[in-house]
Amino acid sequence: MNPAFNKKIKSFAFTLGLLASAFLAPAVLATELYAEENGQKTVTLTVDSAVDYAKKNSRTLKSADIDLDIKRRASANSWNVLFPDVTVSGTMSRANSVESSIKQANAMAPIMNAMGVPFEEKKETESMHWTAVGNVTASLNLSLAYVNSIRAAKADYEAGKISWEKSQKETLANVKKLFYGLLLAQENLDLQKRSLENARQRSAQASANFRNGRIPELALLQAQVTYQNKVPEVEQAELQFKQQKNMFAFLLGMPVGTDIVLDGSIEPVYVDLNADDLMKKYLEDSLDYKSLQATLNTLNLQLGAANMAAFTPALALSYSYQPVLPDALDADWGDKDAWVDNGSFSVTLAWKLSDMLPWSKNRQQAKDLKANIQKLELSLQDVRENQRMKIQEAVDNLKMCREQIQSMQRNVTLAQRSYNMSATAYMNGTRELLDLRDAENQLNQAKLGLANQKYNYISSLLDLETLLGIELKK
Image (cartoon, rainbow, N blue to C red; front, side, top):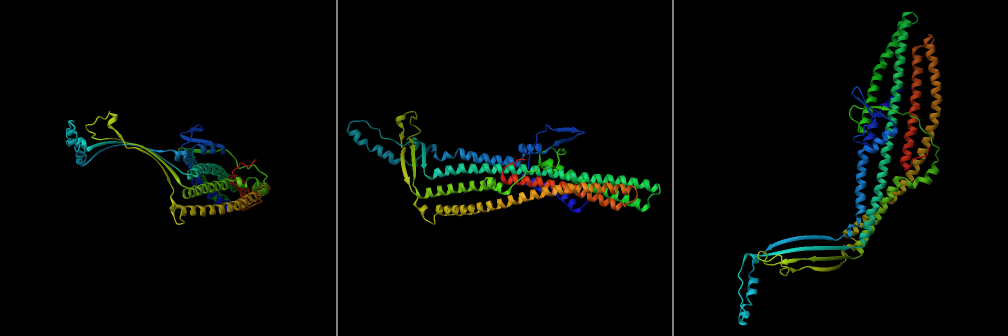
């Protein structure tokens, strides 16, 4: 087997973990497809069922759902800045001294007595020290800046929906890539197992030929050594493939010990694409571009709110009802005449003139917003050009993969004929074992190269669909 292809397959485990940990972390999974076999749980997965599992159980997607719900609630309730603040309180207070109140009340005694009206001078009691105070206050601040604040909250929600959609598409695309990557690893394992079986058969045949005196002992030893060398290679490949499937099962939230049976094949569905047409139709509809536009819109609204707050006055309305009950311990709380209302209503027009100063906090925040807007506008230009480049590269790569697949299919046919002829010649004693091994390696390289290129086509097409934010017609 070509070491280069072996290296690609062995690195798949790392790629599996990297992609999955970045985009996929599902939790517990429905078990309707599970079957018990000798205590071993098995599940048959197609690429579509793997995607369905991820939709239901991906913690990444659930986290994105929570983020979107936060922004949705903020948008739905953004009008609450127009709702008055209402405060209700009750207080019992004790005065340290009531002498002045007593003297003021008793000052009327001589006059009342002179008029013949009996008047009993007040004496200090504990109740005189206590006063009950209730308070109900409603205040409402109105500013033109609130209009843009409400609009900014709604724009932030729209940006959140774009981020949510992007997370969905990226996660599910990577689930598919991981699934097809497992199929590629399985193809490599199957090739190694067939090579091992061929080596076993050749070793058995060599033993028979040696007993019949048709080959020397050296040829028998070579066949036996070749077979024995392949045994640990296949065992190692089986272990790696099992670990890769276990990792995928874990990421899909399946119980520990679940054995995945892959139901599918690496057979791409070809799509005829034109880079210029894709750019015209979908360039500005890509999720990356739309996400930046939504963020830019939000920043513009925030800048408008900051300017409104600085250059327009705010109107403050306040109303309070404050019933006060003196001599609270001895008074009749149910007597409405005993209560005094110290409440009020006020209308205030306030203009924070300091916010208009260039070095004020408001103006510095506005300058920061303007700078970030300029940066986003530059980023939009970069995204447009980067998208153009990526679309062109993806289309070119898909075209190259398709051509190479066709070429490799012909190469597999030729390699198969070469192997068949070499095997026949070896059985007839006209070819050396080394020649047969070379022919087998060439056949395996051709088959694995074809499968690898098919995987590259599928992976590139998924990347292009994620980039454009659409599913290309097949």
